[in-house]
Length: 312
Image 1: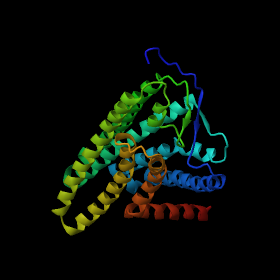
Image 2: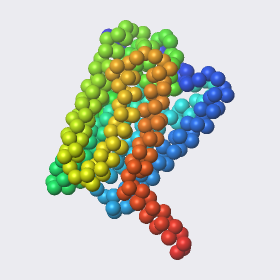
Image 3: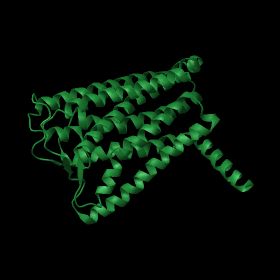
Image 4: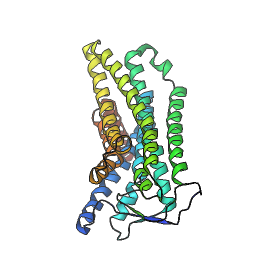
């Protein structure tokens, strides 16, 4: 690495999820439908929160940001994966590969911090309800969202600085459906052991720190809920259950891919699909199906839309 970037590889070959043509057609249809659901579901949430004045509160402001992040988290890798199902040569340019690594880590790290912010929001709402709107004002919420994006950017830049300096001169097959940092490092014409440790430490710093903060927040919340009245506790518990579910389905795959890798190819692919496709799909479902206010907002939106159509 002392000689700078000695890369002679202009593109990489993605092996994808399957080599069977019939299975790839089936996967194309399945993931196309899932991706359309992800985009439409998250857009609906952002639209409802933006247009419905009943949802103009800190929790829903953060939820709209989560939907925005989820939509882009899936968009980094899923459209390329879908188009590759119909291609015989699944190639990606060197710059395209670097872009996937950068944006995947930027958005994923940003979402981790955003989930911590959402947990803090619930902590303040449940443990300090009288001071909630004073503490979680628009200025602070906006600042916390900016911190989440800044953390994601710094984390992604730390990966980008490493990858652009790696010498690639030989193998160029990536056994996955997108360019992921651990797999790209393995293709470098250099000893990757130290880089693997560095990457695991870098990802671990973000993921484990956020996960510990989330555990602390929800522990305090659950302790407070146990001491509350049954009516208030039931609503708070329902909201927290949704949040905790989202946290688990997002963090568990990330931890087993980047922090504590199992190095089982089929499992790594499954976990990568899970956090890049199913997590952004499940988030809208979890927050809307379990949330009475979101359901009511949807009913108001539909009735207003139908009403305006009828009047015209």
